[in-house]
Amino acid sequence: MRREDFANDPTTEAMIMLGSNAKKRIIFLEGDADFTFWSFHLKFEDFNASALVVEGKESVRQCVQDASNDFSERVLGLVDRDFDPEIRYNSNGFLGVITSTHNDLELDVLEHTDFSRSLVTSLSQTKVDKSGVSAKDLIDLSITVGATLGALRKVNKDKALGLDFHCYKIKSRDISLEKIPKGDWFDANSIYRKYISDKKNSDKISNADELIEFCEEEIRLACGEMHLCRGHDVTLVISIMHNIFRKSGRSSRNGDDINDLLLGHITTIEASAMPIFSDLVTWLE
Image (cartoon, rainbow, N blue to C red; front, side, top):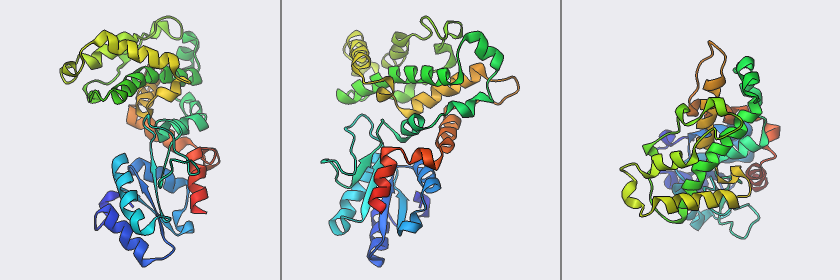
């Protein structure tokens, strides 16, 4: 159920459903995209379960906590990891909530499906051949840019800086087409400064150079670039790459288009290999 379908607040709605059916179980989700994804791959009614969208990670945690007072074994929350420790169903930190393996569901999906298949038909083979990259290379390059911004997001969270990331969106001019795939095809320092020098953020930072050094250190220490990424940053850059290399006459894409395309691309067999998917199925069964 999406939020607009509730007659009551999410916790009350869940309590009514759980109280009226002794075998009913509830899965709390962060947003509509999650609902669409999970409802496509799992028929919750076959497990006597319902999914409720409650808008946001903290809301999911709160709803699970509130409903667990009376129905501790019958409620579950699915949330994005967002640089927090990963929580599996059988882990010590499990308190009714499990997380994505990467920072969000989109990245888990990206890891478990060959998304480049859905891009190939829209790309100009001439442009791709001339640049020396493939559709898969474009995704890998997008992950590299996503990790750059992700490093800033992680430092911001770790140091509780409170930076506003809505002040700027990476654009095609941040990427040097003629330098792909070799050379300095994007300037990480320049991207960082577009965020930290914005008037919404500048007063929150005492030393911009030091902050950038922290970001560079995060990238050096990361166990793979995707570990630092946020899905929507990656899909935004994929959309930029798509538009740079798209065939003449093909429609341009934005980050939301690519995000929806990614979530809709994975097969149920592929999705079942995701740890959060197998955790959910184990809980349902």
